[in-house]
Image (cartoon, rainbow, N blue to C red; front, side, top):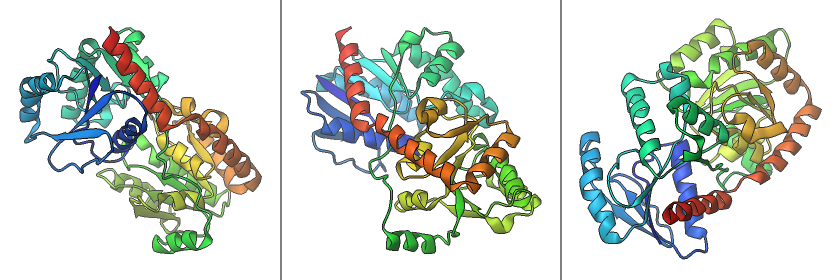
Length: 368
């Protein structure tokens, strides 16, 4: 069977990781299927064994949609493609081949105010259309399936939950010289709590900053707070809370980190993730894989992923975050217990399993 993976313009962060790790997993599988991947101008080539790349034109959204519904069906027909899988965009609505799409987050259904009007309009229109017209929809957690099914009024059987996993590059960094070099490069404090992710409203950083301010004031914890991630228009609101709380000297915005991120996780006393909603806890699992104990919110797919290996608090419970943050920051014993649980928890997830489940879905769809 010939399968086309549409990996055009995956962007950055989570969807890029999903695209890269899934394609690597498919490339490594011992199966009889042939894989083609579509890329756009400006995308980095994947260069994976057993996967042929086709670079297609891309000028603007209107041209992209027109090309996907006129030229692309003819191209895939000539190639003899049986199943087409879009990893991000919902553009192809025509063609006689079977169609699969991955939905990455139902957040727009729950927190529409966090979206620009045109982004919300796109997802609110295209997702239910794809859910009804495509042969299968992949979600990244059971929680996501419930949100989509309930939000669109579409039977849950249309959706297939396939969990993600950590990138294989994440592992504890034990080498003292490497850890010291990373600490010096990013001017990391000797003891710190860590957040990794984008700085936007859904990440709920204001709650984290306020909880931290009380913990290092009244409760007297020793750690500073390190915030790693791309800044955005929302950064000024978070920094305003930091300034008003009088803790600017103890909160460190270090920007995005990629190659050295495993070492940063390994250096942290505690990883804190107060997000209002996550489809799947990819970042908390990265932290666990590197040996960081995790405190996170109880929302979306987070409980499904971290299980009992993390302390969870409702994202709106500021007092709860302060209480648990203080308790964990002061107790090395509690942190060590979470660290051990985290190492066991992450063994449940692998990209090989994700790739195998995805191929099994291709085969099921092709048989229909």
